[in-house]
Length: 524
Image (tube, rainbow, N blue to C red; front, side, top):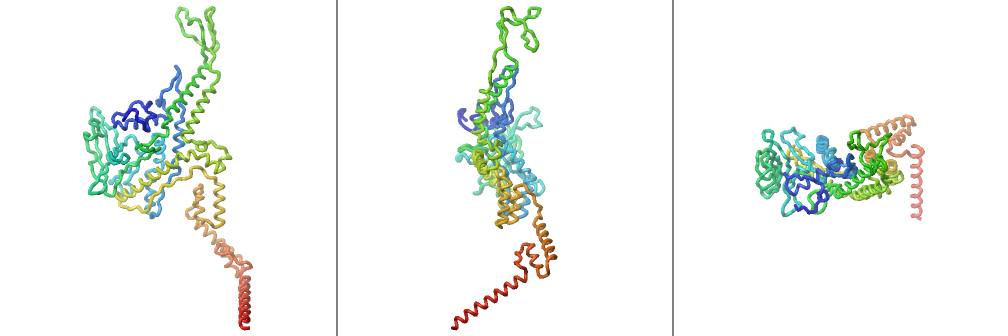
């Protein structure tokens, strides 16, 4: 890779430090950037050098953590995996798998680190020796140990993948370093696409990733996975994708110099305040001497009287009159950081009550953040759909159970809802019989309300009791009307049963009169 090549790590290249020389040259900047962006996120002193005065310490401002944490919070916020049109067994299998693998917590942890580094990766594996129902595993892996192999003719098509880590054999007395490498490759067999897998321990030299690596020990001999498995089980998530780049970009990409300048400015202000408190002094006299005539340091302390040679002066130098220009510059740089990273005031929680209560105003102010994460939401859902489509195949292969239904990732609302307004909407729709009781409860559950599983049975039982009580209190000829009114089957007739009978008789008599009148006119 050319030293001047522009890629997603170019802006950090000047502060990367040592590159890992045991990996391919084209991956050295990538791995070094992962380490550097971790350092910046965790606000480590090794992230970059700052100018300091003797005796002072650099001051690092944790703006990077604000950018990363806020962005990660809104990407795929409220993620849930649902199975549509699946049978009860399939839904139970998916639910148990997600719980056993702690998928949601692992995914959101990997996502947060991926926002800082630029990439995060999941690896689907199976162990046939495990008990039935627990043979599959889904784990996040450090992207720095993953080395994709791309097709030479189709640059963005992955045809293989190494998972490689440096390894020291315990039995080796010299402590030599090797590489433990798990490799997947796509291969065409009898006109069908197949996936091979192999694992071994290799010497660093000749290059473990080259065409002729030296194998030291075979861990898993190369073999074909089941013919139903046609995709490499490595799922690469990019934080920020860009046309023509195989890897993602860190959320901190391009902000390194601004982050450094903000911390440098804060360090300078702290140093200026320290000097202003201690003071800087000037004299045209020589250094003080002790009784033996040996020069010593000046001692400036409360209550101490210092003697200076006759005709000399000793005075305090005027220090910084105001730090306002410096702090204004820091505030300006931080505002540009927030603006460039699309961190709206709403995303940072800096919004007044009036705006918070206005759904439209809140949404408009949130648009910059929404625009940033919307595409990443779509890409993340697409990758998760692919992952769990393959998971169904793996489950069938290794567990012998066919999973029915489509597994769909869904995300929640980015902004909190106004509960009062939402409840009023639901009440109005329910009163107008536009929604069912079940839909009403489903929507209320999203607002945090919890209903017992047998809530409908409880409501039916209460209605039946009310009907029986109403029937017992009503006259015999009105008991059925009371039951119908209490259970909601049909509204009771006005005036009771006798009135209803009288109305029917009157309607019949009127009809007879009309028929007689029509018959007379017809015969005349």
